[in-house]
Length: 116
Image (cartoon, rainbow, N blue to C red):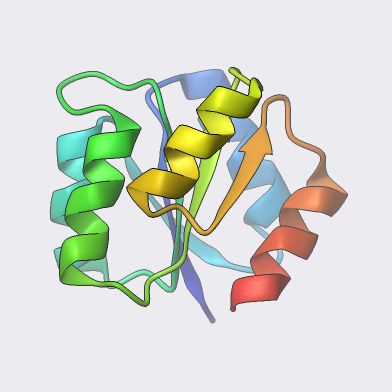
C-alpha cells in the first residue's frame, strides 16, 4: 500500500485527511515543517501533503528542502490561503499541485491519483 506523509499542525485538518485516505493509503503525520523534512527520510512516503502555514519551518521552505533531496517525490500544497499568489509561491517552491482547504474528498483522491 502506498504511503502518504501529511504535514499538518492542525488536529482537525489532520483528522479530515486521515478520514479521506484511510481506505486507500497508509499515512504518517508531521506536525511542523522541520518534522516533515525529517520524516521524508524515515517514513519514505510516496507523496507528501504539505500545509503551507506551520510552525518551526513553513511549508514552502520544507518543500524546498525535500525537493532538493528528493526531486521526484510529489508534494501537494494544502492551504486555507487560496489566492493566486499563494499557489504561485507553492509551485515555485517545488510543489507539484495545490489544494485549498477545506478539501473535497473526491478532488483529494483524484489529485493523488495523478501522481501515484
